[in-house]
Length: 367
Image (cartoon, rainbow, N blue to C red; front, side, top):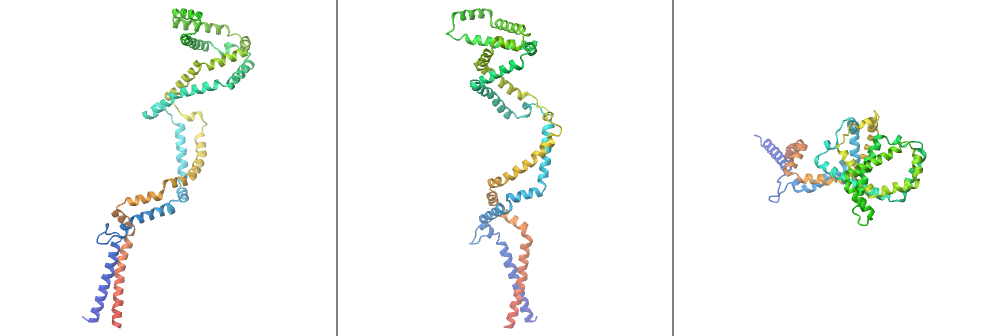
């Protein structure tokens, strides 16, 4: 073989191998070795913390800004989807037949709800006691009695107190009076006449006493059914009626009745069927509510998103996520994106090595 040609081929071959192997080693050393060995450490494993921090900062400051998120959500039709889902949710909430809270709530939640409702009675009773003790309550009672005297003065007692209502009122009045009598027996400062009366009532028995009081109240109300309310109030006197109502409202028994009524009413809500809420609203209520709530909800999201992004600390989240990846996983991610380019770098090394070999041969010939 011609020595010149042989020298040319050797220079090109050596340059090609040198260039390709050098670039291949450089690409390999981007990731290897994973741990430091013989003073060698892959560029990416060595700077993994800096890489994670850089990726986190880029994502947090450049890629996931509140403005970019809102723009992307709007462009992707998210708002239209939100409006459609909101209308669907409101329509289902208003038009679906629902049972009682007892059938809808989990047992653990139901227990807490019932505890809260039971505690509602004492709370209401305390508020009632505070309110009835104020001068304003007495003034309101006085205004109410005066209005009753003026506006309902021509109505008869029987128009308001029907036979059923009269019987119910008599029963409740007899029960309350009997309980008050029983409670008053514990008062050691009572007069001798009161104690004799207690003895007679005890001999008659509680049930007989209650029945007697019920009949007495019912008969008294029956005798007054043809009288006008104005006549009743005039006979008693407005101030006397006001005083009686105020004293009755401020009595411990009234406070206890308020507590019992509040507790019973609240607890009964748990077993009362909810039904279809939309029956109380116009037919187009769901559409109108969705049209009104959609813009308000979107505006709220726009106002809350910057604060939400700040609280999420996306930069730190991404940084921790990257640091949690193994070096092999990071290599896999990078290679999946840059595999073609990395191969091209190696091939360019062979090409450039061959060119350098040619240049080296030419320079040698010239010299």
